[in-house]
Image 1: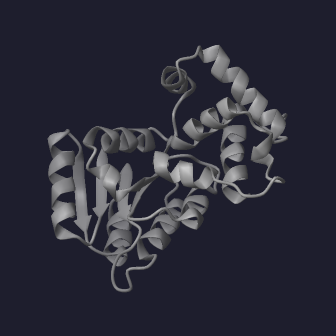
Image 2 (image 1 turned 135 degrees about the vertical axis):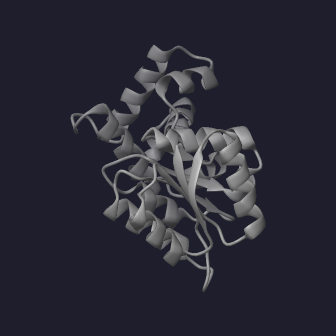
Length: 215
């Protein structure tokens, strides 16, 4: 894939460039701030952008705002953002939209090279890739009125795996059940979240994830 990197830490940025190059990807630009990121994408849109959420000058949400602009202006470009912390609002904003090709990983996950490369590949294929810890934090609820309270523990596991961007086959492998069992759980999730009859399976899948992210 053709990748643009945006990371203000020179050490991490150069390490990612080397890793991706060794894995056969082409890094078309490696920049240190959001302004340079947007300019690089405008000049030559890549397959995927990998961007830190917090970059100069304020180190708050420059990377996030750039990522959201990229999704609006260049919907064909996948976006994988990296963050030091679990930020629920950021995850919700990134998932909002009609397309996939988006991911949210904690920076610690980058050290797990296989997991990072798998997430990059999923985003490049137009799917989602959310850090398991991000999903775990987002699934925590404190109110009995939450629609997620209707789900069984197994359905909750399936929904968490869906949010991470895994296919039905991958979920079946993770949970050691048949793919048909996974499909039944997903249909039950749609029913309990009142998403039946709303478009195709992919659209309902995204709506199910958005439902609990926004609840």
